[in-house]
Length: 247
Ligand SMILES: C[S@@+](CC[C@H](N)C(=O)[O-])C[C@H]1O[C@@H](n2cnc3c(N)ncnc32)[C@H](O)[C@@H]1O
Image (tube, rainbow, N blue to C red; front, side, top):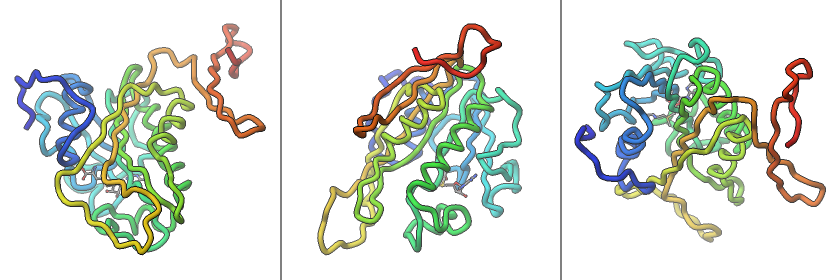
C-alpha cells in the first residue's frame, strides 16, 4: 500500500515492479474519489501496492478466463461498454511486443488469444484504437495511463515511446508526463550471436490528458523530403463549416 502520508516528491524513474510504478503515478495523477477503468486487467497486478480505498477501479479484459468473472467485465478495450465521459482515468496496458510466433511472455499476457500474428504496426494500431476509445469514455481533463516498451522487429529498432506520443497528440491528447520503470529483478534474456542494439531493460508509462476544450489538436505531417513537422489544427470558429483548419 502507498502510505497516505507519503509526501516525498513523485519522480520520473521508478526502480521495482509495475505495482511500484503505478503506485508512484497514482500518487500524482489519480485524485481521491476518481473513477478508474483498467481496461487490460490481466492479473490486476498494477493495483497491488495502491491504496484503492480512495477511488474506484473497474477492471475489464478481453480474455475469457479473466473478463466475465467476479466484477471484471469482459470487453475489448477498442469498444468499451461504458457511457461517454464516465471515467476520470483509463489504464491501458496491452501486450506490447509484436508476436509473429512464440514469445516468452505468451502465457502471462494471453498473447495467443489477443495478439498472435500481429506485427509492430498492428500493435501500434491496437494502442491507437485503445487511446481513441479511452478518450470517448474519459471526462474532460481525464487521464490515460499507457504502459509500453520499445522493441526490435526484424533487427530494426521500433521506438514505441515516441510513436505513442505522436499518435496520442494527433488524437488531441496532451502528453502530461512520462515515467521509466527499471526492474530490480533480473530480466530474462535470450542469447544473440551478434548484438546490434542495446537490450531494453526499461519500460515506460505515458500519462496523457484529455483537454477540456477539444477544439485543438497537434498533427505530425511528413513533408516530401521525409521531415516530420508539427502542425496545429483547430475547429473553425464558424461551427457550420465543420472540419479542421491549420493555425
Ligand atoms: C500486459 S497484460 C496486462 C497486465 C495487467 N496490467 C496486470 O497488472 O496484470 C495485457 C492484457 O491485455 C489483454 N488484452 C489484449 N488485447 C486486448 C483487447 N483488445 N481488449 C481488452 N484486453 C486486451 C490481455 O488479455 C492481457 O490480460
